Amino acid sequence: MNEPKVLVVDDEARMRKLVKDFLTKKDYTVVEAEDGEEALEIMYKNKDIDLVILDIMMPKLDGWQTCREIRKFSKIPIVMLTAKAEEMDELLGFELGVDEYISKPFSPKILVARIDALLRRSNKIGDSDVVAVGDVEMDIASHTVSVAGEKIDLSFKEFELLLYFLENKGIALSREKILNNVWNYDYFGDARTIDTHVKKLRSKLGKSGVNIKTIWGMGYKFEVDEK
Image 1 (cartoon, rainbow, N blue to C red):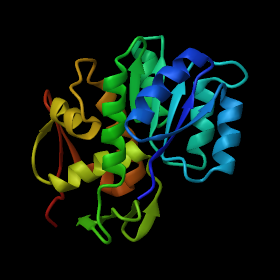
Image 2: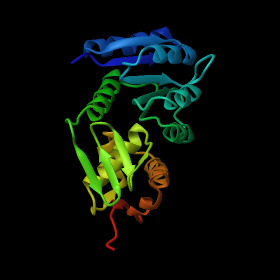
Image 3: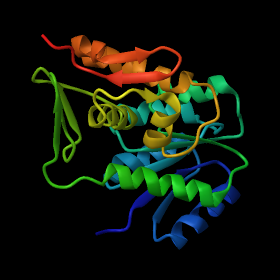
Image 4: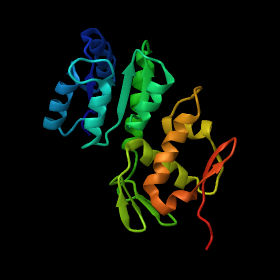
């Protein structure tokens, strides 16, 4: 199996070197870009990028714009780095399809652990694993989802969230439990992060969106009503 290839996008050469040094120690191949425009050029030419680490404040094309462009043609995991720690920035990142959000300064070891977890989850399934509940069917190997036979387009994190719901159908799940399992780390912030993802997922599921039940004051449950 080839070494995972990570694209590090940051206008600070010192920051790129810091991240690269830790990733190469973990046997990752690292490609660097100093702004969003260069990052997009690299991704257009290299179809084997497995994950993007993306800074927000950059010249030419900032992290938000770069993320939007990447999501037009790729579902690979995106880790957003920022010096800002404001809640609305984080919520915007999740709205755009960011999979992890890490504020500077951060521990490089924690960053690498998050990347390890994301790539394990994105490559964890065998040849033909299909999960189906009600009208929703997920082919995990091909990373596709269909509702009543019609394919729908989900981001990486939406796919992981839906899979977690289906694997735990009928079970009430707290927001904390969902975040710890889908995002793979303890979350001490506002629960609106998970609410934002559920809202988008319900919309994309169409009529089957009602199967994601709200457990008021706790979290959510995926349950198909008996006909």
